[in-house]
Image (cartoon, rainbow, N blue to C red; front, top):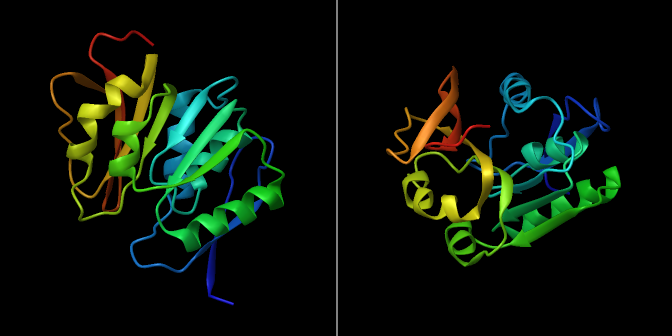
Length: 184
């Protein structure tokens, strides 16, 4: 069996439960501290919200959202081995309202037609894909929807976005963004 890492879900229904993920170069789950901050920003619960975890990786953000009451989470992961681990974790947790899509995020987002309340963007670092995704995000967000993004460098999302909250943990910059003019 391939070596596995694990990360703890920090809140909600599955609080203190562990999910596993394979040892893969560049796969770095959002830390407990940053996830705690993010979900404080989002209001702790996501009751009834729909979420897109565009670079699912370990699944930490998507499973955390489901644990905190999200009505639906779509996880997008292009690596089949990682996708299988996400499915195993979903089965272990008894996750419902979860869709795991095997696709490249850069191809998935422009073709997707659904809208989401929260979109999580935690892409592999040093690929500079966030700037390629921003033009497609507005069409995928519900009114008052939010985008969470992580980057290895300070983010400049453009004039159509407002940074609601931001932080830094080590070499990770993280942001909660809304479309300019949104009030939530």
